[in-house]
Length: 127
Image: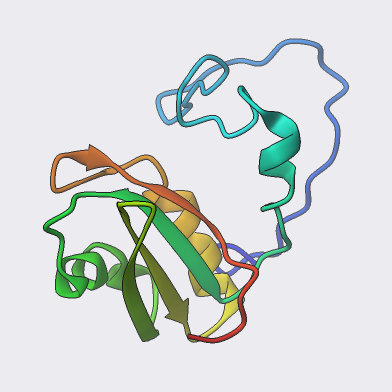
C-alpha cells in the first residue's frame, strides 16, 4: 500500500519513458545505490518493513530533527540515532509498513540540515 492504494509494479511495454515534473533521474547519481559496488549493496536490499534506516546525516543532527522531517508520513513509534564508522545514522520505526514506505518514497534524497539523506528499509525488526 502506498498513499492508501495498492501498489503494483510491472515491466513496461515501452522502451522509453516520458518524464514529468515529478520525475527524478538517478542513473548517474551518487544516490543510486546500484551504480557502484552493486554486489555489496544487494545484501542490504529487503522487502518493505515498518523500520527505515536513514543515513548521510549531519554529525550535529538531533533525533527531534529527524522526527520532524519524517512525522508527516505517519506515527513514529521509536527512533535510535547512532554512529557507525564515524558517520551518523538513524533507525526510525513507524506504526506500519505503509507509513514507512510513504516516508521512504517522499523523503529519500531530500535535504535535511544541508545534506541529501538516504533512506532504505531496515532488516532489523526492533530498536
